[in-house]
Image (tube, rainbow, N blue to C red; front, side, top):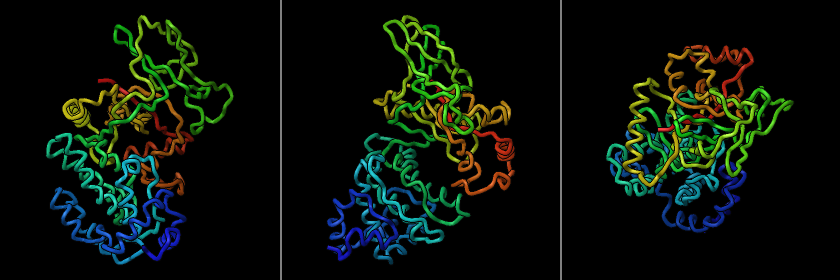
Length: 403
């Protein structure tokens, strides 16, 4: 057994404590480490992964350098062995248990690449999960390679300095729940999180009613930036009787109308509710949002899920993003690619702090900046900067559409 206790090791690597469940396997992992070391600090392991799975194409040298450097630090090596062991637990990969998180040490290569090695340790797990679906070779390879994007994601926000970000996010790809098909990424085995139920009548007309949503008097979600004042607010709920559904409808911008409507069950069917299985659409940071690219991606997704996941009976495509805010159409005009993407979706308001654009557009990971210093290098940046300087915000909203 290691002479270090789990609390002493935590102190050595600069954290307050390991996740509590690490105590259950700490001794086992440390005994194995004392006998064999940590396989994930051997640079040759990444040559093996590269040759075996045709991955790590762009950053193989970085993985090997990180393995060598972490391997020179016994305490980091022990921590890596613990994290990699924990990732064998599906509940850890699924976000039900806590991930080990090292302290931020800007410019410390070993610390900033630590999670890259942990992610790579899951490649064999991911391959076994994905192979059972008999995916085409190109999609299998691309899905196995998705977690490598944690490196460019980090570099993009840190002046091209190597490191790794979003280990928790890429667990979706590792578990076979996230696929990149053309321009867009698609998450499956997830439930609808919009605060609304959608109904359809015999003629194909659709209407959404807000569900258990605190609403500002304007009709936007209460508690959002600039919508915190509770005067005139209410909670929009749906009342179901033997013959009808009664509630507050949403307008075309996703705002709630303070006027109860009644939908007869003889005429209207509920087609989407919170918790229903959906496909969640995600937009990687690079590439065109042209209508042609989006059409190609959506067509590929429909074919892919019908072919390889016929057991996944989803109700709709959804997107939870600042890109769903209809104000973008006002700012950029209906002919912009962003606006055209936005207008594919019906909108549902939801509580939002209005800060997402700073992370995703301006690459500001926190709010430690002034609006005046934001760049204006693109039409989008210029429009957003003026919008915020005018005392407004762009909100994260829910969008949905049916096939």
